[in-house]
Image (tube, rainbow, N blue to C red; front, top):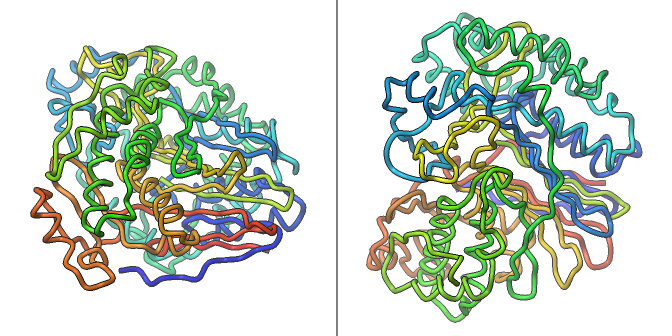
Length: 548
């Protein structure tokens, strides 16, 4: 189990994320007059350098911003290339697709899946445009100034942190199994001494990424989508068999959206609407809001939470897709009447629920807050580890593999198609109460994210814990069927009662899992009643919460 930490209390502002150098960069921005969006962007940009296995310049971004008056949502996820169709995927894979993997957090059904590596799952990176769009609407400091520390770490190097080093080593092993010209540059950029990962404490540099970040900073990201970076990306794809073209990059645009909510015991939990999976968390919380969890034993509470999450995922995996291309019944899914109907399906035994009919009824996360009351919940990702493992020569960054979240089922709303956003796992969260903001939160980790949100909200609202204590709490993780992983701290409750046995008696197939990375990495900042903030950072990761 991770060692518990103390919360950070700060009178003026705070930043929390999974890598300490990035958190320090955000805090420095706040101290020199930047606002929470400036701090979040500087942190996010730095994370692409100091935690490259979890996010990169070639990834996607989602954010929720409280501007002091209302919430704004930004969907900065990219679309598939115009040349990517279900037929081209099947032709490239011999008509079979790929074998489904446990890492496909967006997989909606058994059977052939989208490939996870190489060019086929590459979608247009949305992060650089997301940085620009957030800054244009809310930023205070000059855009280029927010890149300074990231460029310095890329140019001159930094000591790799322990958790980053461990996941990096696993990624090197995976890369060794990949063949093809498109994977060659990854080894040059992301390995040292002839093919190994950098070790904890070892200094690592990426001067090519420094050059790319400078061009993004100087051009407001225009170079990434219509300039030299875009030309390099499109040219490399054409030479190595990728469908990405210059028109795909030039046509990219972020989307400002209104967050959607669920009520939970006098609080409001906000998520972004599809194509993200945030509705899974809201569906589960709507179900649990009608259950008196305080009257239940610890094992009964866990049973209800697990079953509610299963029901939320069943609907998310059935209906979530690109709302620009298909109708996603978000409003119908989030009605109280629908929640009541789904709640009635929960019994004393573990279930394997099907989706309902609402018509009838290695990612990084960070948060920041400033003295003026602005708060930011931001998440960005490559998707599975280093993403596609495709690195365009001379640019120093890898491309995401978000297209692996598409379905190959022609009848599914999330079926792969040209110019379409896939089912997305990364979701920022925001908590409110009685119409007033409490603060930003998130838990990264693919399929873990909605259930991490449910557990963090419950620990805050039901147990009254501060954000650090809520993050320190042992977690559980459900992926499919009746299989549930629990951390060792959940094996017995505070009174010494055996919890695992009770869950097993209800049909849950429980495994006690000591590996902390299975349970996601979270951050949270809550506003204090008398002003200032209290912040917490994931004890299972390298990062920290900092404030001033």
